[in-house]
Image (cartoon, rainbow, N blue to C red; front, top):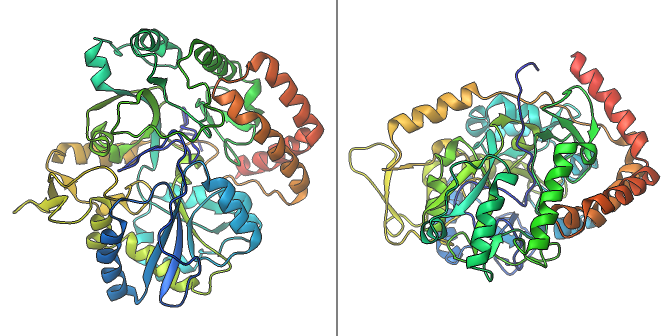
Length: 488
């Protein structure tokens, strides 16, 4: 593909559109429902994040609509941000029976046969929702030519931003006008930390990833990457890239200065959007965020952001919010039908994402699909838009103008595309090596990305361990497949 500039790299730990909280760290596991088994009348879904405070009320309304339209109800069990990866790994490897889940480790698990093949099921049982998907979502989620996920149609492109708590900017008269990189942020971090040493200056925790201009063949938890400011035809080790290493050095400098929490590498401490426990955090924004509108709504206070990457359609973004159907599910067709309903039924989706109609919001008379937020719209009383359903059918606030919607749609049409979009690495010949590499990375990722360890000392040790784990064999095979992909 010809059109590309930069990429927004992403993992499930940093994210965000919609009513989302605690995205920089983890949280305690919160579950909904008393059973972890699904039956023919109730489908079991695993979802990442925190259960809404009014979960029962939300699902009473939603399940009434779902049962009317599909004949089944949905039982959503929530697993906290810091625990999701580990617990879903156990669930998948044990062969536990569930129906739907927010996808974790999507490509490797799809290749292992953990997820149902939706290539034919999605267009058949979720046709309306499937037809609304941008082609980038389909291309970015094909694994060996087959589709194993139903992606949420939302921010098909995105960019990374540093989001500031405006109450502190105003209180201490701090300017962020010139911030374009991590390094540009240092002066305001220093000034804030001197004033508020007990508040997290850069609120990050376990799972945080330093972002840069890369796209990743198998996710940014592995070292394999394409440098989108360099030779986009080459697979590199991200930890060989000078700019990325400089960013890691910056994190270490900030950690030593106390701007980053001292337990960041192991902490699941929450930094709620609506709170005053943080000064700056890292977020992901895209066209359906309408600038800082959605984040500010979620926080219940004004937030302001500065972008430090360029908007781009990427593999990471295409896979940002995937839902998969388990191969263990006894209700595969019905599960796809439910996903289709969630992504095509405005009444159902808006009631989940905006909250209870009449309490959290109301429709504006004479203005189609426009709503006004009420006093009852508060954090933790609705689901996040980015990982619930099709943002295209969400009602928009009265503050969102027609020009803003037009700009949103035009920006989606004009967005450029990563050269790696649609490339999926076939891992069958290097499964052992990839497993070894994953084990190595798990030992180093949190320490390096949170600045807890010195990258100049740690990266050489990590690279030696990667070499022993079979890095060169995997890189060679990946480059071979990527070359063949580019020729097509």
